[in-house]
Structure formats: C-alpha cells, structure tokens
Image 1 (cartoon, rainbow, N blue to C red):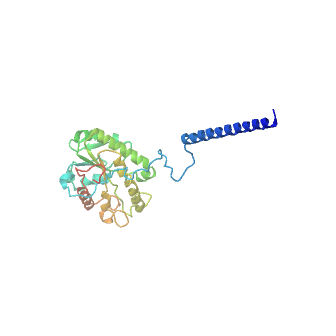
Image 2 (image 1 turned 135 degrees about the vertical axis):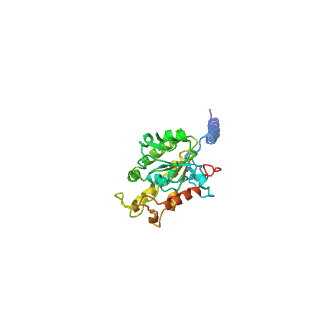
Image 3 (image 1 turned 135 degrees about the horizontal axis):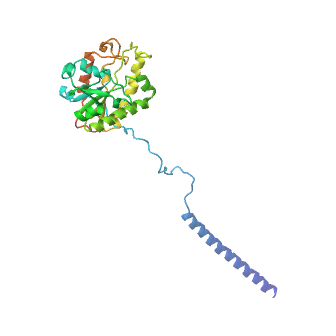
Length: 289
C-alpha cells in the first residue's frame, strides 16, 4: 500500500470514529432527557412545596358545647315546681327556708336524716328519705319511682380541699352520679349547680374563707366540662348572685354566722336565678341554652 492509500485509510477510520462518537452522544443525551422526565422529584424543599397532607389540624375552639344556662324569660315557679333538689346542706336548707312550693313541707328536696351529702364513691349506696312515702331509698331507687323532669345537683363544698388537690376525683364521682341518674330515670334533665362561695371570715377549714371561695371557682370551672360529656346535662352559675366584690359570699347572705349556710333571702335569689336562666325547650346542645 503506497502512502496515498495509507493516508486515505486512516482518514476513513477517523471519520468512522467521529461518526460513532456523535451517534453515541445523541443516544446518551436522549436517554438522559427521558430519565429526567420520568425520575422522581428532588427531595430538596422549595418555597412552593405543599404542606404534608398528614399534618395534624388545629383543634376547633368550639369542641366543647356551650352547656351553661343563659338568661332568658322568667319561667316562673311552675318551672321550679318540676325540679328535685339533691346535694349538700346548702341544698337541704332549701326546705327549711321555705322558699319552694309547699314551704318547709316541700317534697322537692331529697336528703337523709343528717341533712347533707358528700360527693364520693359511697354516695350511690347511701339512702335518702323519699318524701312521698318516707322510705329510705338510694338515689337511683328514688329516681326510678319519681322520674322527675329535672334534678338540680350541688356538690363540692364538702371535701373541697381534697377535690382541689385531686380534681380527677371530683370529675369521676360526678360522672358516676350522672350515669346512675340517667340509668334510673333516662328522661330526667340534669342541672349541675355551681358551688356556693363562703364569707371571707369563714374559719371552718384550715384555709381562710377567701381561699375556700377561690377553690369553689376552681371546681366550678370543671362543671361545664362535666356537663358537656353527657347528653341532657346543663350547668347553671347561681353562685354569681351571692358574691361580694371580693368573690366571697356576701355577709348579708350568711344565715348562721359560720360563713357557709345561707339565709332565706339568698335562696330567694337562687330560685329567681334558676327561673330566669331556664332550660329552654327549643335549645340545641351546641348553642347557648
């Protein structure tokens, strides 16, 4: 092969190599483009990245229904006459103060011979004197007989320091009482009444009266939550008509000087408050009633 032929052969080989390399680059570039089109998006966050779909949402501000009885038209004594009252000595004295229909002989206040009860695990096994017959019955037995339209409960002053130290006990015992009432008398509407304050000078406890009145407000804050956990249960803040400027019981409502037990005028205020904060028949549970 002469020099001219040898140079032509080398040139041909170079052309083949260049052509092959060009085809390879074109094919590789196409494959890379396709791979980029079908590959997953980068994990690198960007300003426009959407939020994670499984992130927890903020709780609604209105998860707990408003169960506090609000001011409304005066429902009159005929509304009060449809109620049974059950609670501590401050409830029992509704009878001795003569502010209910029937005066001091009213059959609307359920109590035992001691005249007081305490919210506890033993309450459901204790008895009351059932007024229509004089029988000693548990609260469940009495309710099964009576089937009242309303029952007004008031508990928390007896044992208040223990309840404030262990709020779960207060909630648990109240829930047990409500469950027992509803099992015995399913159609009865239950009203949880606020705990009444005591006078600033009250010295029944180791703590002063101002502190005990503060405790009543602490427990009263739990009552709407307890009511909201059940159907057919409401809360009424009757205590607000009894307080002085310091949040304690107005000394004018102190009947016996102990700073706890209430005068007839105090009970008249309480009954009027119940009348003007009635359970309105058309109210829905998630509205102010």
